[in-house]
Image: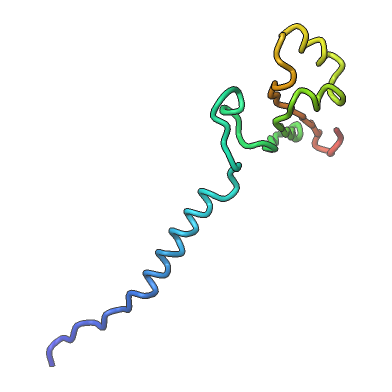
Length: 112
């Protein structure tokens, strides 16, 4: 009895696995991005708005979050020095785009 060739595997499972992998790669590359990535000014160097970053070490945790904001919103709720800074820099406060960074440091016991 001569050697018979091994039965050939169906191609459908391999095709489905390939399609699922490609679709997952495409979805992870496109979802979660901002609607329009800014390409001018300082915002083009920064990650999407509302980005959070945490660093841990032996002396505790440092968590920071930043957001893109506008000058009129910060005039009422921002620091007192903000108005003086606007007058010194002579920027157009109606259209100025600013980045607000807030950082929280916690010790190993969780105290701020």
